[in-house]
Image 1 (cartoon, rainbow, N blue to C red):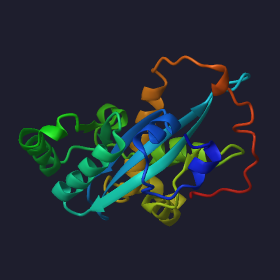
Image 2: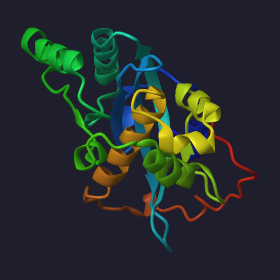
Image 3: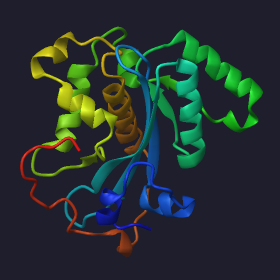
Length: 224
């Protein structure tokens, strides 16, 4: 099991021992952003949690790995590879992609190992069909976890970090789905991981408590 400091420093695509990964990250979730203005993107996010004796548990979100392709079928194949490697609980996407959905069905019919690989529209996409997701994901979710005095999202300088750097605040309300697929994939996976994880019952041992987490001061604001 990695310490929280070790986990923060690990590079994208680190070759995990399965038991070590599962002991380090209590929960994992996948996100897919379909091709649009940029290549389609897949990402796996890990949730690392420690209980504090005072206050709510300290919870961090780490990007573990990513993949990209402009072809929806190739993108799903790469996501399936990540699925076997990281065993996320589920995959969410930003909107319906006909080619991706059709190929997903082919995967389930032709590959028994893909029986538990499913992707579904994220809650926000279901509740607000056709809506611009960027104001919600960037201003309401990602900035909250990256800015301020307690950084809780570690993108490991992935493609999403690159696209976030390219975003201008004044363009966010005007962006269409598919403009920055990596931001969408990370944002929706992050929301699903956060919301689903809140509903999982957990018991705690004395070793699970660490009151030092979350007390470090963060200088400035960084996406990486």
